[in-house]
Length: 107
Length: 96
Image (cartoon, rainbow over all chains, first blue to last red; front, top):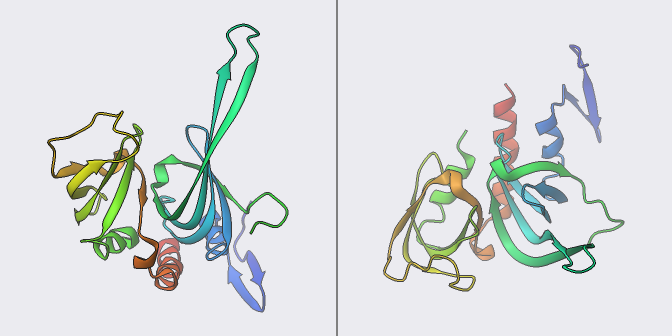
């Protein structure tokens, strides 16, 4: 629960009441992980965003995950397709979540 | 309140690739944009293997903003510093 006078400290500065969008602001010019609808994920450098979660990402890698079911064994095979895009506008209505990149030390 | 509207206006005349939610990708020159991020493209052609509805005879098109998934942009036409500063201000002004 956020009560009046919640403050956060960023470096030497004190910022008042951080709402979720403010936390995204901290990631500007940092690499980011974005989970999107239709089993898509993006990893890229955040250059801009707005309250709809429209975003511009640079040096982006998109991963699309699909499942195929083997006809005979009926086992599920997960496939991923990747591509890189130098600069990408992402419409916010496709975004599910935004997070710092999950792997150890992303390039 | 219109960061991306202004951003797209600055890209008018540049070549972009609009990827729609139905997986169609359209390459063309950005002609105009509006507050809903509806887009008009000129001299289009369908990228990504014309296996999707190839619009061979279509030169110009209007795309409703809500059906856009991505817009691929030319990296060297984008001033990332400017964008980041604008995003910081926009986010701040939205809070109040």
